[in-house]
Image (cartoon, rainbow, N blue to C red; front, top):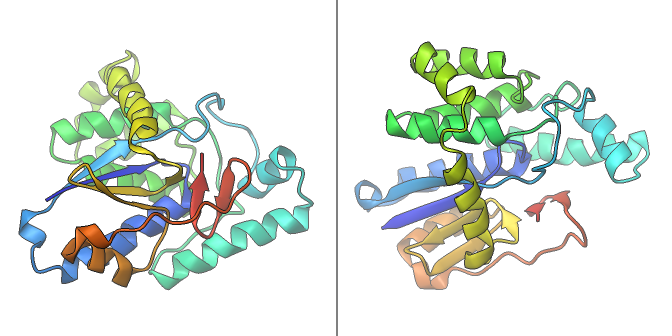
Length: 229
């Protein structure tokens, strides 16, 4: 079974979706026959390396929310993260561009460390309040998962793996991605957005039962179903 997952490092629901997928895979009898492939998606491709704002501040500015509404929005993902064993500190999260981070994950894939790299980036972003748009931060995080510093610097100072990131971004439209995380089994059965571990497990066992998650956001943004594009 080939399981492709489109997600963004800046998507709080994607990290939650990954944890739910891990739990489903741990219960799936055919786990050894599942190839999980993490695909890139850029929710905010024109973002600066860092906005210089916290997540609640950016939400308030970008979506014309009050500070209270912005904090309420981040509280939902924080609570959902806690339910799957993750700790989110959204009040210190530093939004910014994730293009280099995605390129780094592609490089890490060539070293067998792609999933570890992506997980470390999510943790840095949502738990530690680190800027994943900062290249020195990316170098340090890459070293922490066992990647060679010189090779990482070479990737980040070039446009290596940029075409792969752009190609997967474009492929997302072709396969019908409208929410991330987006799960695609064997190129034909899909689930859009965050669903329960039980629903993911049922889909792994019976791919034809997959049903897209209704898109609830009227414009790009995130809610409990995922991040709309």
